[in-house]
Length: 327
Image 1: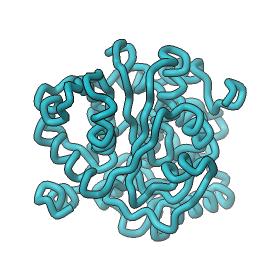
Image 2: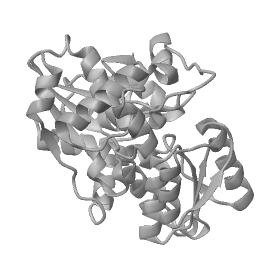
Image 3: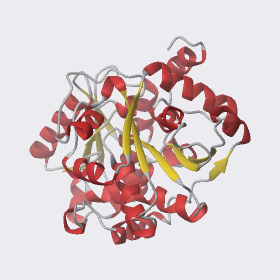
Image 4: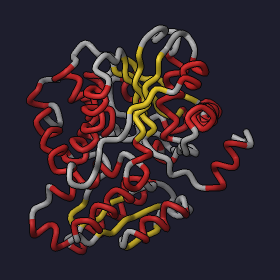
């Protein structure tokens, strides 16, 4: 994939960081001795704590990056976004900070605590459909009918640029990292990281992980072409997508070293390990990086590996089930 066809540039990431600086401080990158011991194989794990950001997830970067780049007339009309939670939270928070009206579309039965948080940031919540893809169709319809600016969770260059700022921080905080492992739903986090790595550390391997039960991007990567799945039933709602995305798929194909999947049980086990060893609250998608590292640990033995707790917005009932080993 050439520089000309890559979805964003390194300069886009630098510009996004400049826009974010008044609102978001760098999140910590921490090494936890108990986590190193749990992973084993001589691996040193460096955890990017995006769960410490406003809204409790890395999507605060994406939301602020996208909304702070809007034209004045777009800000006045307002924006609409589809989400399972964290993207909507990021957009709602950024909209509140910037004075931009926000509508957030979620599927029926969505995480009630994330829904409440979206509303607490002053956004209008629309509940329709059975999953994220249905909510996306609703958001697109509202954008057409009401003249709102749609802000996709992935197919938006400024969203990907915002996500790239977290990898930029990681390489500044720990320049000698030897591998990175990112969870993939839509791919903004991984493609943002690949953009940074291409400029600063082209030799640095980047791995991706997805839930077995929501594996469209993984399956497409291995097939060499976009494929869709009929469902995306995972408790890691940040990974629950049924398709690939135009702006990220080819970059994932071109840049990733490998792409693996993990089971629901492996995601739940990784979440329990992170709670026990870091004493941080972690959602399912936030544990996926560790789950992927555990699957890859024979290949990454003895290396310094960066992972991301991408969010900590797990609802009480799901957390109870995970800690009780019911998942």
